[in-house]
Amino acid sequence: MKIDDLHDWNLSPKAAVALQRELAPQLISDAPIAIDRLTSVAGVDVSVRRKRSRAAVVVMSYPELGTMEIARAERETSFPYIPGLLAFREGPVILDALRQLRCQPDAFIFDGMGQIHPRKLGIAAHLGLWLQRPTVGCGKTHFLGDFVEPAAEKGSSSALIYRQEQIGAVLRTRAKVKPVYVSVGHLADLASAVKLILSATTRFRLPDPVRAAHHAARL
Image (cartoon, rainbow, N blue to C red):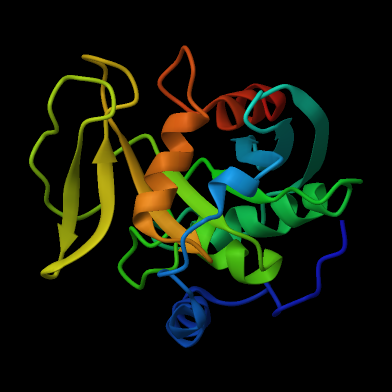
């Protein structure tokens, strides 16, 4: 998979924040994903252990959700853990894995945030600008914003509000199980992002491609 270089990753935290503010206006978050035309969707996750990071990308057929391809990459973890700057810690190794793919996935689901972020540039949004494909963030834990707990039924959701603006949805992917936090990355809108997450989730809380990537990235 060919990916053009958008910027240098070797930045100080202060410069990284400035870059996020520069890049965020380039995001497109009002373009519905053409879900009925998707033939593949990729899950992306990273595992970090003892200063080593391993990224995994698992591409699945859609809507069947059968595994088509798995790519992994590993490198030293050089950027510190700083909330809001996860892309600078995990982005380079994810791009290493993505460049190994033979296929071109139609859409990507990241284990992490999209525009649920102080500067609207979580990892799914940031790398969406590199990929120029629809990207969606699906986080497991609350990061920021206020919400009302969604109803217990599968498919129930509530708005996640930050600074008087909806930046995501709190979505119940399984009945009576903790919700996930869904947000647009790039080239998507929130309604289609939620629809993609639900349609890519079968037996477990996380979408199948993300869950597969999580297992593939284990160190």
